[in-house]
Length: 209
Length: 388
Picture 1 (cartoon, chains in turn blue, green):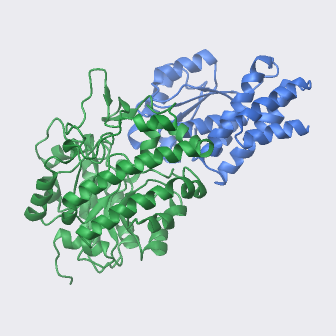
Picture 2 (cartoon, chains in turn blue, green):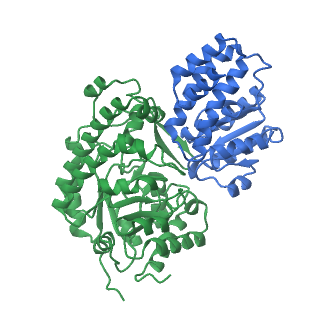
Picture 3 (spheres, one colour):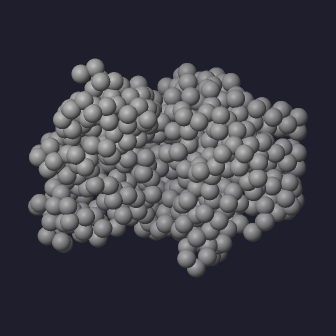
């Protein structure tokens, strides 16, 4: 057990090498990969996510923790059986067309992963077609859209309209966020959810389940 | 009744923390918004305008005809690219800027930005920094015609002149050279590399400012340092501790030199510094470094509420901005714009120390009527003494 908490600490501290080593040591001791994931890697990530939510740490610390978690996850991934890898659900995540801001989106992706969602990040400057294609391929029930500029907010609306045209509006829950976006705007464009920050967005995603 | 002032007197008085005749007015626009707005005003529109504050920022120096027509108070000027050519996008939508950062044209509805791709120093070591092709602040292209232009605007208009000479800055430019996420992680993992990079960028920024201030400092009311975004919407990007260890020493040097040279040329001129976002925790540090005008006042970022800033720092600091470009200007009605102008003036204008402008560049999604309403309302509510 002590090893698991050391693994969690190494993720929280953003120590990639340690996260990798401790993950391997956990497996060498015969621990279940799923336990290592939940009680080691994700536990560490959740601590940093909580600190970020309370404004007690900043972007570099979160990025380093996410990097450390991924180091461990690389080792675990081939060992996780389908049954183990049961996630809360798949979320397709991206920044809309015309907008290349990605740090906020990446932090949300990390916090969703830390909370047990499987995240498919389609990147920045993403057109509606790409979102739709990915949702179909992955059979994902949740779409999370980010826009940082008032000038790219219309692309949130366009993407939601394209979902409706593709006949997917009833099968996919859409959440929107980004600095200029408000609850009022989200309602106006027919989004299912809005979040003021990444931590709240995780709660919104859970409310869709 | 306060005696009517010239624009230059109005700005100088306000920046000296005294009440002028009315709140001074400034303007900041992207290329796309500027073209729309000129058309709206019935002025001629050119295909292309030289870049404003930096090559990549897609803003313009608003021309005197617009400033005169709206009765605004500040004209912005500055250095040009070292080749003197501005930027030219190739047929594939790419452009390599004067820092050798490749940029790609990314379009949104109504305009575009030149976004950085493939940061050239992403794998660099300290040794690589010596050989890097840094922009040359002494190149003729940066300064061609600037002295004549400043002198002409100073003598032929009564407007205040605000200049920016630096073309990228320190922390901000490092994001483009190293990669946005990488430089943030580097500050924790590779502090020696970051110090070496920031020291180099600081040298370049200092030389740009030295060249520019010596050339035209005597004509200016404000020098704006290269923009540096340290804040997000709801918090700093990095901790105050990281800021103090990794960035502040370079601001101390660079602001210090600019301030000293500027005051030698013109004791009344002020140092303006741009950072977006929730920077409350480091405002005292920035004042200590030499910031006299904080740009922008961003009303909906967390913790930098105008009334709070004014109350805590109003005796030492002035602000530029205040009218929200994230929600009110693009999405609000003219009535909502006027109401925000009234609130902002009530909060920020008493005692001087406030230049009203949009809280960032106006983008093309802002209805032109909202822009004119902003300035009309400012003239109505901004008469001193403020009685709102």
